[in-house]
Amino acid sequence: MFKISAQFDSGNIEVIKAESPHDIRLNIKKDNGSDFYQWFHFRLTGAKGQLCSMTIENADGAAYKEGWPDYQAAASYDREHWFRVSTVYKDGQLTLQHIPETDSVYYAYFAPYSYDRHQTLISTAAAHDGVSLEVIGQTCDGRDLDLLTIGTPNSMGGEGKKKIWIYARQHPGETMAQWLAEGILNRFLDDTDALAKSLLEKAVFYIMPNVNPDGSVRGHLRCNAAGRNLNREWESPCKEKSPEIYYLRAKMDEYGVDFALDCHGDEALPYNFIASFDGIPNLDADKLETSYQYQRALMSINPDFQMEKGYDVDPAGTADLSISTNQVAHRYGAVAMTLEMPFKDTERTPNTETGWSPARSIKLGYSCLDALSLTFNRL
Image 1 (cartoon, rainbow, N blue to C red):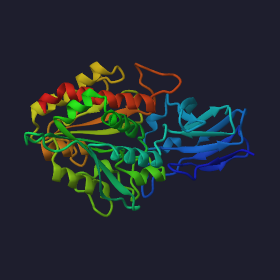
Image 2 (tube, rainbow, N blue to C red):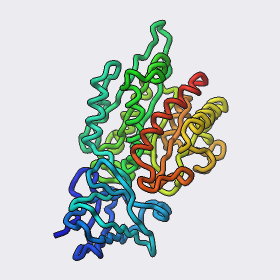
Image 3 (cartoon, rainbow, N blue to C red):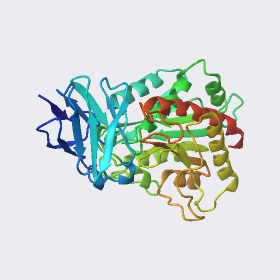
Image 4 (cartoon, one colour):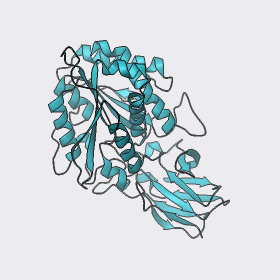
């Protein structure tokens, strides 16, 4: 007997009708306290060798319905290797078609990054020499907010090092962001990585791989447990409703910020790109140029990254200061950037089997440190 289930970490689906594997009807549940929805993650069992047709009926009302055309859903038998399956968006509905090779297969909007893997990542990093873990607060659901510090604040001569912040998954459904953060951490945990060592001689790194663990576990696309879009909370975060940003920004106030990379995923655009802080008040043109030099360096290192396509640039003085990159650049005089990766695939460097994937996100994370090394002298 076949079955659809989603009662697990980051699971999200509602079964409307499941009388036959050939006509399964589904809905995506909204983020708690919000109208946002798009993330799905469910398990199909008992349908080995059968052509399964799974239609998400409410796809047209999703947060970013422009993300559905040319999109292919992710699937996995072992929750390690994720591949893409036939997916068609038509008449406001999204239909996945697949013949499972086993009696257990998972489908998701993008390859999930589990809370268990997050805890393993944090524990592994914290056990490494030169890495310290600080629980900076708790979420609405009572989960720890983990901040990793890599390196020591001062050099041997007492000169202050640069403060580099890297944080991911303000939007919990954008799991590629934490895969990228894992790639960055992997370099620092590799004692043979000369470039990582050289950066630690000049900088201390503050890394928060998952800013929104509640939303991640709940299977949200964009919000925390209280229904707050955390990347619109940076101007005046609320300790009760957006504690994640309240505590994170407080630590930035305490430690200082010279460079910040906020890692995300974009539903619609099939590109890796960076949004900068062009529209903030009292713009420092030299720091803005540093952000563009960083992008050019990243593009020269990793062909998956490009600069031609991305978001429209904010006109001078019009930036939304509730957004992380704008607020951090304005508040601290820092070079701040939002790195976006696709849920689909990269248009110019496609991989038909996996699309954009965890492995490619990890490699882009590696490249982010190379680009930082090339532009570090401008910070």
